[in-house]
Length: 371
Image 1 (tube, rainbow, N blue to C red):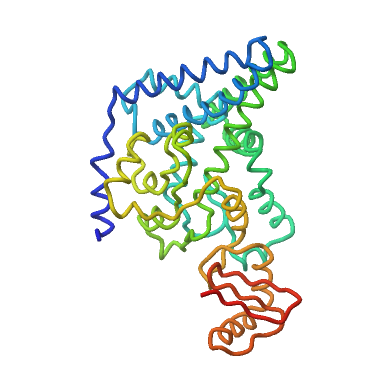
Image 2: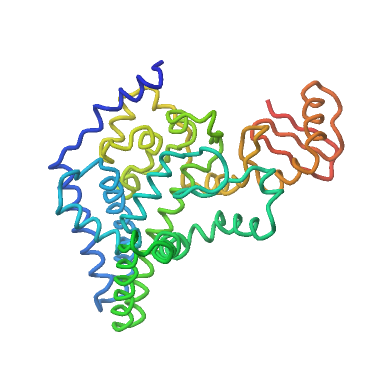
């Protein structure tokens, strides 16, 4: 087993760009995206426009991952043409470079580090912090992590949080956010002039799919069963990559559309590895082959959205209901756990699940302690 330093060194051979391959993959992805988008915009039959619109959404995700890697400096480090093309793409998808680089770099430096709100990450409160928060703070917290808000990331995350708010707060620093808003307004105006079907299929549907999928991937990659959060004094970069970043199980074609971002634990270990070399790195380094996993299955999606609050004592995520129960009577909870583990008769109405740190109440008088 390698030390953390040795593991980081082991990833370096994969952090080398194949420039020709980068250009080839960008050209293919951009060409396919623009062709599908053109069909979605054109006054062609709906049976052709609808699938083209859906396909455009997925292809936007792939180009976005290429843009994401360029922002990390993993590819196109010295190419002005590539930077110009991808920065323009960032405007189109409401992810201006100045905002993305600032927030996403912060995310990598503070991945699952401490609690509260950090730029580029979904906020996480402990049970006690949520209990002590005002009703407005609780409401904003619930809204920010709500499934519908994440699914509607086109408006809530990309348009408002990634573009509008940064431009209003610091217009000089984030002038490109203003440019993105202007370009987006022009695209909406052009789509409306061509009719509501064009606005819907040519703009709203593709961006809703791309931004919603991207938002959920970002959420589930750091809010999943088994994920670990640490305070600053106990936080470690390598542990955060391996224990706080998931591997996303998906089909090979979805790995293609999502640019291998499902290999997220590898990406967080070394963000300089190009997206097309992430599978190679995982296959070559034994320590990366036993990751914590999630997927697009309904069961896993449901489980990720149950990761509401962080329980510092049990070192795991819990639901809002479980968090409220623990803060309300923390002493009683731990005495019941201890009594159950020793074989004593538990208190009425308590179900103890050691596997997921869950405490639930019901109408029966029983204790369930899974082996």
